[in-house]
Image (cartoon, rainbow, N blue to C red; front, side, top):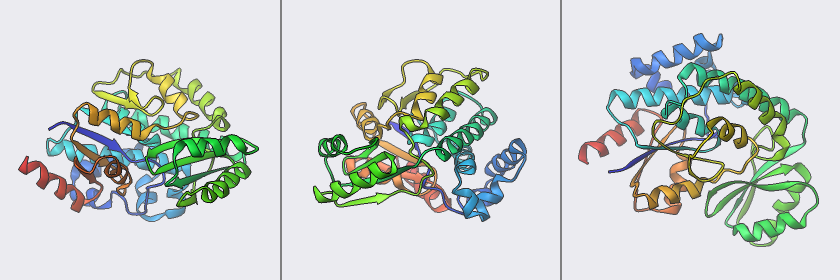
Length: 306
């Protein structure tokens, strides 16, 4: 069996995520308490009780990261690990943690800054993101090239789901034309800015400055990165900085892993969004997630049989 951990992206968060693990596992409780202590406020209180703050990118990124670590620690207590790791957008920071590029405290501090930088950059642009369902990428590119204003494909999630990002009017125009040309749906996303585009350059420049003072290690496992959709080769800081403005090549990473013979995909984080993407690419592989006691036990039962 060959396994990958894949870390959920921003947007899948929900109030109460991680609570069952917090209540049932001392190692998980320790992670939440440590996060509160590092941040100087209670992120677990926001995660368990405050939907408005949880959906604010200033808090979402550190909340998701805390959950990634709590789940990794719970899995470690059951001797569950993976040789490969990937993440969707923000989720890549979970993959970097799994690869020991930084420790929990360093990663949390980076995401506190990243969330702030992205929040500040988004305030200065009128931007939107939208999911386009069941439209070929080539057709979508042609539509994008025909509209006024800036917009691009920001996420290649799976064959039937592409996400566009850019100036609000251009995104709305692409939505309209995509539906006219056969897209099943065009859904405006509840994000605070046009992520993964050049409109976020301020945030990537500030992150680059911040990272100059941070010591990072080379990945300890097999890591694939968003900016290329392929295996990590070199310069981890550059990859982290570019990710803010680059497209996310998620399904390309999944295809690459399947080519490599990976047969078990485990999503770490809230909901089962990435499981759904992987299922559309290949239904024959083992696809599991861990976010609460039920999903954890289902995975552990499967691993017992292997």
